[in-house]
Length: 82
Image 1 (cartoon, rainbow, N blue to C red):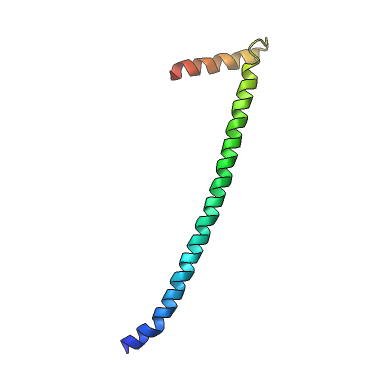
Image 2 (image 1 turned 90 degrees about the horizontal axis):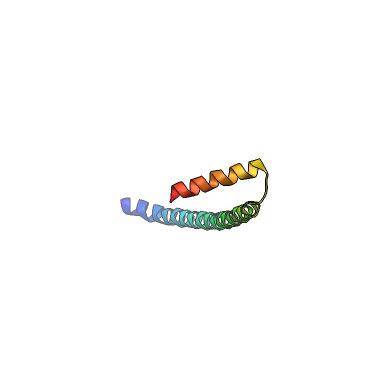
């Protein structure tokens, strides 16, 4: 009786197990794709920040008080970080 029940339920269990593995594999692949996209986005934004900082530093000769304050503040933070 128990053997008969096991014989009937075992294939169902294996099917469910395969479906779960398939579902988890798909989810893993989707998360890997999203991770790659986000990593690319982070790299692009980091490059943009770097380029913007370069543009700001090119304004050293500018007499704009806002720019001078920004540069002074960033310089102080950099020195403190050393």
